[in-house]
Amino acid sequence: MVFNSKNIFKTLNTRIMRLHRNLCFAVIDGLHLIFNEGEYADKVVQQLLKRDKRWGSRDRGFVAETVYQIVRYKRLYAEIADVKEPFDRNNLWRVFAVWATLKGIKLPDWKYFTETPTRKIKGRFDELSKTRKLRESIPDWMDILGVSELGENLWTAEIAKQNEQADVILRVNTLKTTKKDLQLKLQSEDIETEFIPNYPYALKLVERANIFKTEAFKNGWFEVQDASSQLVADFLDVKPGMKVVDVCAGAGGKTLHLASLMENKGQIIAMDIYESKLKKLKVRARRNGVHNIELKAIESTKPIKKLHGKADRLLIDAPCSGLGVLRRNPDAKWKLQPEFIENIKKTQEDVLQQYSKMVKAGGKMVYATCSVLPSENEKQVEKFLTSDIGKDFKFVKDKKILAHKSGFDGFYMALLEKSN
Image (cartoon, rainbow, N blue to C red; front, side, top):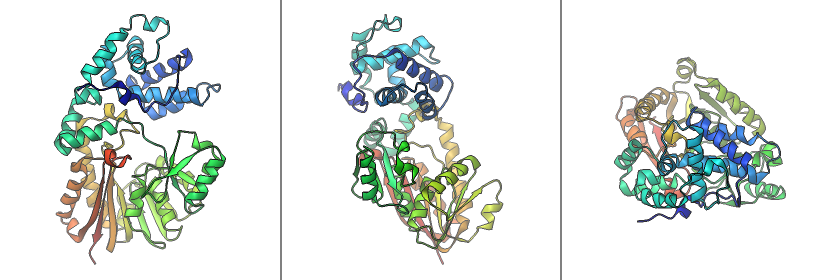
């Protein structure tokens, strides 16, 4: 079976006829920081895009998408280029040459490209692409784990989808506007969006754009949030006036959605072990016009104990491997280690045991992850329900979302109810 390079490159929407030196240098510098210095791809790309004020949207798009594409396919490109980590700058140029050749871009007469075996590159690509772990560019251990948990066919389809660039999805803030009005407002700012069937709060960008500069964003009319993630708050079945605890709130995408579903009535206690994330939530809440959120950093068990038996609803958006959101964080493929996944499962178990005590009799909780692994999802819920604390809960329903079936991030959510 021969794989056409067009499949891999259909996500890159840059019509570059020739390479520009300053843009290519930016890409190489970015790759050095990500591969050799261990920096996060999204942060690196943000820095790179501030590098030259003269760059237009196409230049910026080229830098961002090329960096992400090479991060996604690091293993495959390195194999084709016959280079090994740690990559020196010459190695990075060789990897870049592989990317450009497969993209059909003519290599300029620069010293970095003098020995590029253009013909061999395409042949090696076709040959290596017959093996899934090379084609999808993932570590051996991840491929073995994926097959053992999802089976050959599901894993093959899922990991292929996880290598595609994710769409930009917005969630309308219903405290301030409607989906239709948001669409019209963005249209007036030259940004086209479309509705997505069965996602009541979502708008999908037709083309990528810097939506953070729009009036609509500054006025708090929307947040950027993947369509799968938007289903979680709804799943918790909140009502205005309730006491709701979001215990792994982070920067608060789901917290803000809960606030809009509750029409700003009642109380949401947003908790996290990282105070820096809660500070970001505070800024976002102000922009969203949300005023029913109380922020609490978890520095000890005291704030948890104070809430025992008090919450009408509890959201546990648990720490996880993130194997459902590799499209957004392709560098996670290289940062993740098997022992991290084993450790995170223990954390998930502990979080369920400790935080579930906050749910009052007759209350409900949602356990959610952005992982596609059953061992982090259904199996954690099953284990919890057979524990001493879990015996007070009954399973209501769950939802498993795979990227290759939904087109959006891989997610899991389970709704449990505490007996009266």
